[in-house]
Length: 181
Ligand SMILES: [Fe+2]
Ligand SMILES: [Fe+2]
Image (cartoon, rainbow, N blue to C red; front, side, top):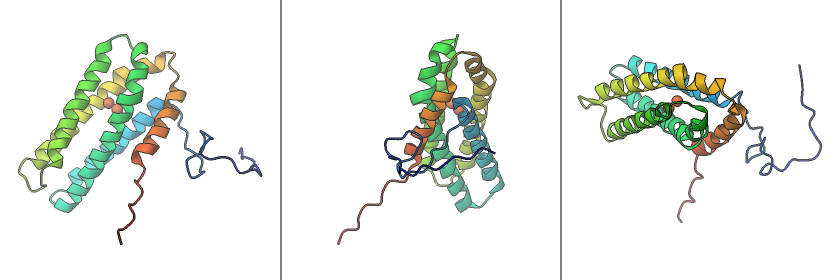
């Protein structure tokens, strides 16, 4: 088993791209596609948990909030980094265009759900339609888009590191504001 030899000098955390702001090792991923596919599995599991929550309204809202957060961060990573970087490696530009349009539709539905109570007659129906939209979108990414990119010369390791760092920023808890005296 390989083991890193700890250096005696304290590395400058903010300057070292391999370290987080507080000096911990940054998780590096195999490649960008692997990172995105891991997110897909996380969201699928959350949708299953939503179904299992049945009539437990509090649990459903809690799970929906997680779904919304995961999807927003994931879509932002793809829209900011992965989609623009992979465009030149994809033959049909419609592959990327359709993915962006599907994101917009999913965001619209998430926005509607955020303004609704779980007791609303249409709450479950909208979550179900969101799940179906995401299933379809993920299926297209994983059966067409990602394999095409994987066959290309795109540097997926570099894009994976970039998305990993951005994801860390997007999911970081904002510092608590000092309490007024
Ligand atoms: Fe995706
Ligand atoms: Fe996507």
